[in-house]
Length: 219
Image (cartoon, rainbow, N blue to C red):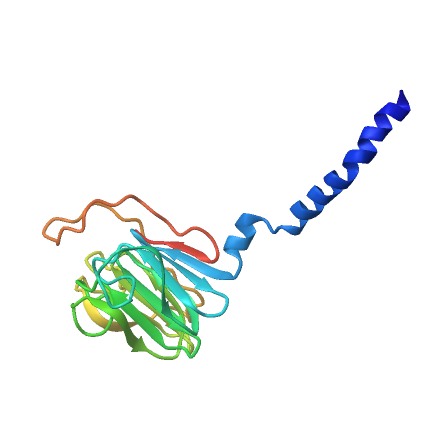
């Protein structure tokens, strides 16, 4: 009886061993797809991934040029936008990239001056805003930069005082904010809601908060 059971096993063992060898040699699909990603960030309707090689990729809605590829056509596949990028942050419909040399670049929707370039015109290409930056964070329609010298700068929509400069007026240029001591980290994201009365129709938005290290959402 034992011999009858052993013989079939001996005959099938080489096939089993070969199958296991092939399966073990194949890398997991999910791990392979995620390899090389340093950071991700989400806007309301667009997405970004920063790879370990410093290349920045965006996809999704592009009506206001938030993908930064020089067009206003949506993209369902990742589009390479920049290289030598250190950090990415997405706002509602605008985007920012902090390059390894400390220069800060923004693009996309700019109706409240959130690009910080002194205008309210949208840009479908990255616009250089400042240098010497250590960290960037975007809210829905306002932006913030922490410089290497510890100074904190904000710009964009300010209806609710989100710029922290004691005013309720929007600013299309960076405004230096004074805090006790120096800022260590910044986060300009906030919960979104229905458009306020008298403001341009930006649609209805669901509450979205930041979600952990290396990942941002802004809506």
